[in-house]
Image (cartoon, rainbow, N blue to C red; front, side, top):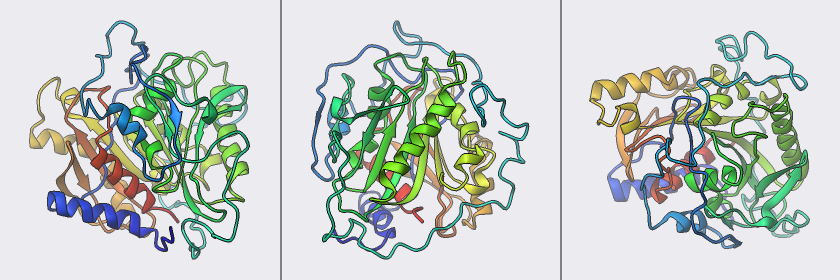
Length: 394
């Protein structure tokens, strides 16, 4: 309680990394070819409950015994397939075609940046004299999520779909970060469990003041067999979050994260004009590089080395080529960041960072050691990634 500087989250992570590793870079993430799978369709044993303990590692608990062990290969029985490219996200009503500039260099404009907010001067955990934030029938705190599912109490009906919602146990006025998880190609029943256990940001709901929201596509992929309804649903989910929490918490930033097909879909969705004043950063995992509108976004990209290398380790030249291909450097320099540094080891993940960006910006590239569907659940990496996102709060 009583944190007074947004930068303290990132400073703490850097200090921990400095002690353990001799340095602090940035966060690990991933990004890959659209249409590949992000996880299995068969639930693994686990339990679903709810805990309000600050800083609990519920997601890590479900995965602690496996570390970075690979999930079943993407062509294993029960793992759904996908197409080669996602349909473009529409920006109007259901079925409306995206503008020609959507996904192109013109979307957002080279000089367009997110509108800065007034500096936050109150206690980061809210005013102790005010009530704790409470949403009817949805408990606060970090929930326990496993491959078997998420707690029923954390499911909210929005547009007649179940949406996972977790928020911190904090007083009104607390500074929070909104994290929207866009799942990859997944069968029913695994969209939320796999997405959240792959990168257990929900375990940081209390310790780092996150609102974590995970919606579900109609079909196995966003924009597929949806009759144009997935995009409006995503906007309704985002509107619900702001309508429900913006007068209780101070939402200082919004991050969207997509894995595999979810990343490919996010590369267009992130550039939707409706998100221009809300979305501040993207986490692109094994799917696509920085969206073309990243002149107004922080961008973190992550890939898996054995996938990129066809089962082989990448050479230094190949790593450099992958980094440049994802577009992080272009936008990092646009936002006043220094030249690239790295790699730095963050747990099993190697990180390249563009440090000292202008206030409110972060750009990093992460290379994990495995294959497409392998998890990003190493506790050191999760802590570091969360700190990097928090450091961009405006």
